[in-house]
Image (tube, rainbow, N blue to C red):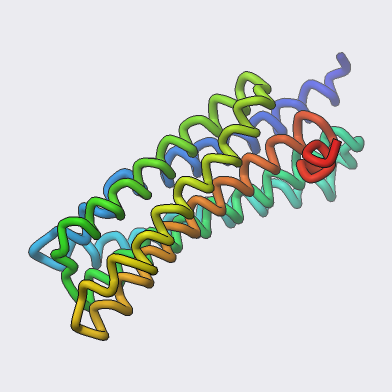
Length: 217
């Protein structure tokens, strides 16, 4: 391997490492998303919203690093695939951060106390958290079967979302509260969608084919 190739590989590994750190940060914040809804004081929610700027900066750093690699190193097709996928994965992670922040914004407006609804929210959070953990494992092990499983597991989050928005909300008589519950459920459901997209991007990194092509075979 030439010195040039070694240097490029180091830069590419560093870019991947930045994406992993961004994923770890999102995973850490996701774990406490519903707890913010339970807090008596809204200061925790305010902190979550303020700290979203850190996620935004991390995504911007990934993009800047990726663009620098493309413009200065002229990567071959396989490497370019990884770089472009890193940009897309960072975008999905940043959107996960946005949705976590959006849940905190709900707490700034109102406190949700319905225990069954909160349990549903916790279930969605936990399902998403496990998906994000497994995405990292699938990437490290090039486990396409696990990626396929993760993508299918997004349906579990969708099912809880449907329970909340077509059943639970009718227990509430307050229209504003009902709207905030629907918003919260949608934010959590979108987190699952973004993790599903990350799994599809990782599938593309490992195979060179879009996930849709794999599913059609």
